[in-house]
Image 1 (cartoon, one colour):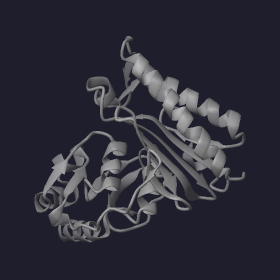
Image 2 (tube, helix red, strand yellow):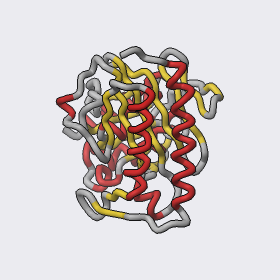
Image 3 (cartoon, one colour):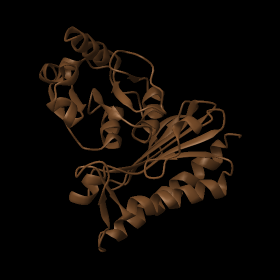
Length: 261
């Protein structure tokens, strides 16, 4: 299927603004909340409503697309990388949405032939859309972004997954102490935005395809490293521990993680 860049760049931001309106309107309503794998893994009726809206729009405007989404996911093995693939997270950071009404994002990553073409991360409450791809660069609300500075671990803040830090996976507690400090936002999209902005020098967590797809495209376009903790390439259709970081920070983190093995 042909990658229709202009059409995607025009339509997707409109869809995301409509989804934001749905979210803001939901604050005055009772929200249906369910647990998935644990009491800390939530899904709301609004997650499903936004997902259904986005899936319907994709199917109407780009028929034949393949879609992977957090709430209604196909078997990953059935995905054919040669087509146009959309990977969606309707609300990334559902716990933040439920408890704080802040620090959550809508994310869409678009791939063709297995290669990232467009990433969209929408910080809903800040009304900031991060978008772009390798052919055009990365933008925040249509203002082109520069690549963040290549800061080493010792000079920057590090975003981490809370469970990973508590369990000291990859010697993470020592890595955290070597940094200027750690931040835990509870949303992969928000964490990755801070790496894109240079507010964090890296983000390490266990991510699923819908957590990573959009951010991987945007981060790599800005010259950041998106690899496994041991420096291997990341398959965007896998669920795996991922490090998104500046090149210097990645080297420092890998060295300290491996010294613990």
